[in-house]
Image (tube, rainbow, N blue to C red; front, side, top):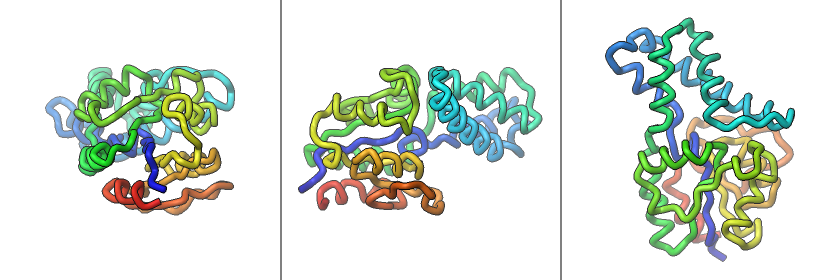
Amino acid sequence: MPMETCIFDAYGTLFDVTSAAREAASEDGFEALSDHWRQVARDWREKQLQYTWLRAVTDDHADFHKVTGDALDWALEAAGLDDPALRDRLMQLYGELVAYPDVTEALQALKDAGRATGILSNGSPEMLQEAVASAGIGRLLDHVLSVESVGVYKPSFKVYDMVGRAFGGQRRDVLYVSANGWDAAAAAGYGFTSVWVNRAGQPMERLPWTPAHVLSDLSGIPDLAASI
């Protein structure tokens, strides 16, 4: 039976989280970043995720904008970059992250096939609204769901519960797509039919659950949704 509901993680799955640092490094006035942008992008993302997990397990929630700013501060200090203007520009660019080239085509194919689509993300509503508008994909999404509705970050099952409330149906009938291996694994543990979009060619996470499918990008999602 085809999957009628297809849910996507946002950051790293639809939106390229390295694009903010890459773009800033090419701009006048931020030449100091040019030799460090890859390190900054990597550290920024790693700390961002770590802080969401730590806040979740300690029950000390702050929205994703706060967490993203804290992670950026750590990454810039680690790179020896003390420039308030650079920080401001990077935070601005994070709201305008570049969508991966395969995003619009995959979402369009799903909508053309009559499938329901949505985002389930750690991002705050404002951040997600900005990113979706910047990418021009709002018309291709039925719901954009933020963890702010439940006040805890993934992989809490409270987050995955939001999909059923918004779309209805059974867990197994949701195709859940994430480029974050831990997220795809946790979604499988929750009961979704999960897909890990392994963009970086990483090893499988050593967790109790395994995604049902592994792809290298989003181009195969429409056919997969039709064939399951």
